[in-house]
Image 1 (cartoon, rainbow, N blue to C red):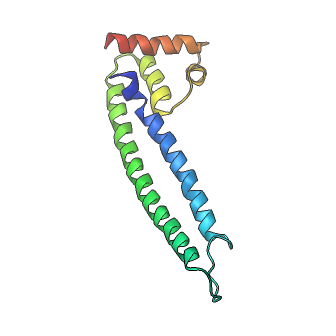
Image 2: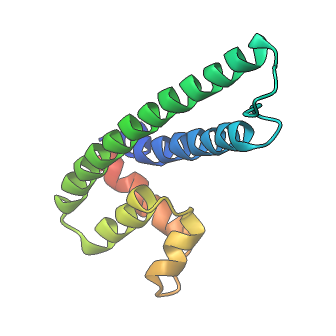
Image 3: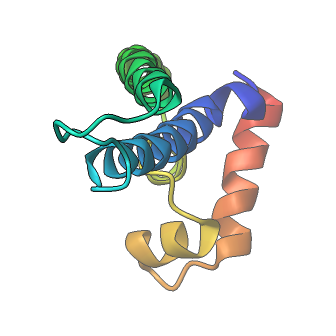
Length: 132
């Protein structure tokens, strides 16, 4: 497995976070008093069209997020199967903390303990990838 393949879960999770922030912004915009005029007073048809577009975008974005979350589940399962096939326990821990949990190298080293450095755990990872 390549480093790029191992990193896909991380980047997919970042995409979902960005999409969720956008969804929150859209929902706030449509729920705010200025977001959509819901009174009985006459208003411009453009306001209705804009509100309809925002609602359609909310529906579409919600579906996109759900699809990406499903992909995350599959990606995580794929990574876990790969990591479970690694013989060395320390290497499995490093791969899990880095690629499943998405921790930076320094936190990976700290989480494992034993006074390991970020350079050491990174080297263990890259050495395993070169050998496999």
